[in-house]
Length: 324
Length: 295
Image (cartoon, rainbow over the protein chains, first blue to last red):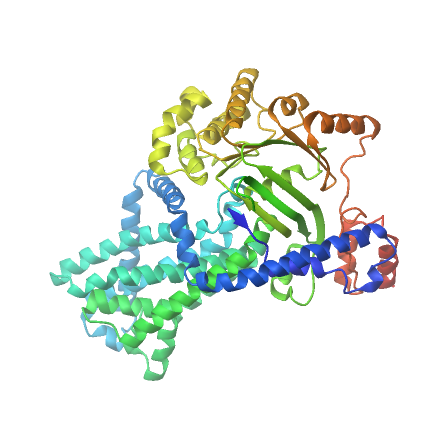
């Protein structure tokens, strides 16, 4: 293990003093500390210069590497969390299946009986619309769960992080994998329904694992980002309560991109969550290859968000432990 | 870095950021480039330390001197503010024994997680479970939730995990104080045996323990190394100092002369509150500026 100090914050901390000469009174104790601060700063700068070149190359893969390095630990925590969820209650797995079923039922009834179906979605009839909405809800639910959980992630594990050498960046991995597992259960329900309705599943479903990987990376980035900021302030979790329902309408959950006027479609694809839902619909329900520009956009944006979220987390990781 | 050193640090320093309000943390995060919203509290500074592989080093010092922070830095639990730190090898910290347990989980589940945190593979852990249970010697409680454990039982289990972790470096902070005599014997025997194959860092107030287990002692005082070297010599110095210096509590209180790097007092209202919250009765310049600002 090797720790090099090149966080910008550390350097800034040491430069605080000389800005204000009036503060540098004849107090010799202070002067002594200033000299030490300077020395610390020089070492920091040197490290930074050397480290910068090396870091650039490794940077892109860092979020994946950290997951791979701690894979045993991630699995151990994941195994425990899943067991926790499903052995703590009498009908653990049953709830995981019934929950999405009830949601599916209610939403389908609302949108087929009480409200007019959007045009493009209505073409396949009620059952097709139900499946399409269910799929949207599953993926959106995944995002919503992580958004509401991520800001509290560090607080939940504060004591654990402070008293053991548990690497804090792992929490995002376990949170995402856990949520993906629950989603997997709902997804099996969806596939069973599709099979029952259509009698077959499209071959393009084999592309699903790729979507899951990139969706996972996107979510990882989101969780890292929210967990880092959420550690500093509780406001983020309040903000999420407002943000998530809004996001629901900006994402094609109850409608399909085809329902929108052409000008707005690009906007939906720019939202990685919307792109993920539409791509998954194409692959799982329609049995066609999704629009290539949507795939590329989704790929690039997911990677960028993953990398960016990780960068933010890494940047504040050192301070996080001290403030939670 | 020489290939023989297990731990090497140069100019290591740790400053905690003290915020007057929680919201200042957010401000610091957003606008940290323009203004500093916290005060620095230097717990440790200028620590130069080199520990050879296989050496065992004792760390002594009074409460609040920075011993535990030093250990936390060595373990990588917190990040240093400045300086350089290299740790070569797998580290097993025995700090705040059992504090990291999840109280709702059974002892067995906690062992699975705790050992994985220390870097063991699942197969290795499963293989060692019986041995861990035997070392902890908590009988049927091994499969009960940790919330039913006594403090002694928790520390027994936590110690048992660290014992089975294949560590190269064992970092021990006051570990055996809660255990009973029998368990303490067992723990000491383990540490004695560990000395021959790994590096031991031991923080203790028990001078006999330090004398028995360490090759070298470092005396940490007021955030710096006050003395280091031969066990007998440093302990003698420490004893002398303890006798003649009366116990004036924790040094370097927040905002005091000793550890504050800089104090910034703006005439905005926010800053005044900050200053008042931390009460720097010691620094005249501050009270002046505060009164100016208030006026």
